[in-house]
Length: 368
Image (tube, rainbow, N blue to C red; front, side):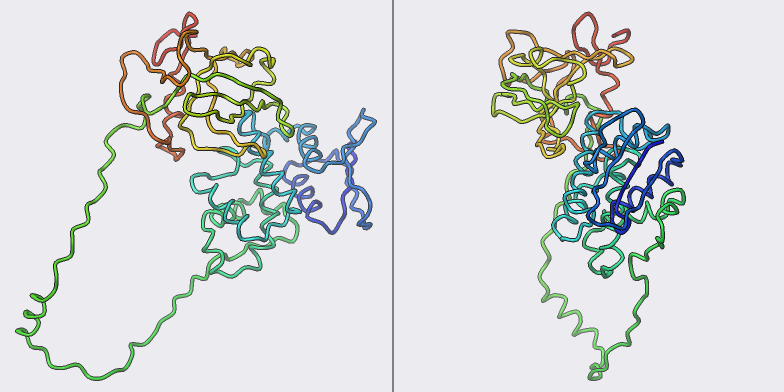
């Protein structure tokens, strides 16, 4: 039996109770302590030392559950993103109230449905509890300042299998839908209408300058040449302090030395990466992965079941900073790739990036 102790009147207890109900965890002995000074902990069967760091308690709890994997992304980058948002909630005491933090969450959700991937994750559970107090007490006008966050919150609160697990939770009416009807202002009676006067006034009006509409995008978003892949040289490597599967790299890409996080800990040793030339996707939007800036992606190749991963290395004589092209394709790279659904170039072309006889190709059948 899993032992879990949390303070009863706390945000942590709300998160734990929500998780236990949502995942139907019946093998957990939950103690809701009334002593605020009592240390919270999680103790798993067969382990002598309890876990006392709450974000780690949540992760270990999910990993020990048969259904917990539903809330844990398998992709290393998505997992790191989830961890960063769980830590964000933890640092705010799972009660986000300041405007800057709310706007940061709102900006992140501009093109996202959930906080770490296409489905609900532990990050969404934690942040739902963390913003509920502010949402329930804020005014409609204040909520309209963070529309993406409120759209996400409204989506979750109307998921019956989710919100029903949150004790004493009632659906919050986020925006005032009442229409205010006003009577026309009373003023001086208008002068009689004279067509000739109206015509003269029209002549006096200056012509408005024409505003040119932005050109319609005709280039397909699945055009591989939108990717700006450049040759980089790994200058330093260290393990991420708060994410087990991530390396923090410093990579010279010619124009600058960039900080890039890469989920290669389970596949490559540091000496297999350091001082190596690599292919860097250099025009992705910047990310914050659990407190570390990541400005780009190191491209790798893997086998079909992704049990083996290797670096995609450019030719040894390729100069650092040189752009990598695909034979038979030409075009200018985007300044920054879009991550919007239907416009995410990398997501569209990734399935056609292959490796055959130790050479990377785009759209080559039979590649392995």
